[in-house]
Length: 247
Image (tube, rainbow, N blue to C red; front, side, top):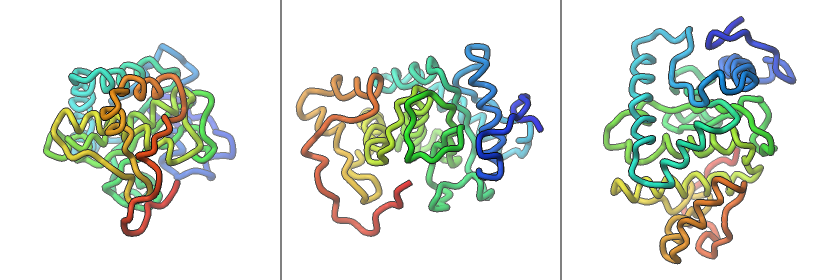
């Protein structure tokens, strides 16, 4: 069996322990990571088995969206892209489709998500680099109004944490880090800032960093640590409907 032109190797626990389509990507990424600098750290090309016009359109739009990130006029955003390109692990992208293996744990086709290539649970965190698979809906790469949401950037932060071995075992910490940069993007493009993570907990790090003049200090956490600054603004839980399922 081959994926991305690479020979798949059996991951720990076997392919049966993972979602079918993700298992092949896991094996491909394991090989790609072991080959070091010979392979790009962010792969923007579709795998050989992807041939549907919809999928080709996804990767066409993806290349444009990532190029926009690389040229975006914000130091923190640009640094996330540069760090991902220089990270020890490899990042690939897949479109979210009707295939259940591309969906997040809540089966929402609109929800982007990033999975570790080693197949281990996210709750274990990562202290060593591992490859990452970013799953995005089509609107997450298109250049329309919703592009202002910063979904691609949000997921790239998760991928960066995985590929650098700074992936916290705490879901709250992981999402606060991703939303921090996502809000920096939103502020630049005039999109409404996020104040909470699907009603589960508050995500006010960006707002707090700007209020206190500590944005650069907060941003440094992303590139040197696996946690986030302690902020009183994030204490408590927002009064909203059913909290998002913790992964």
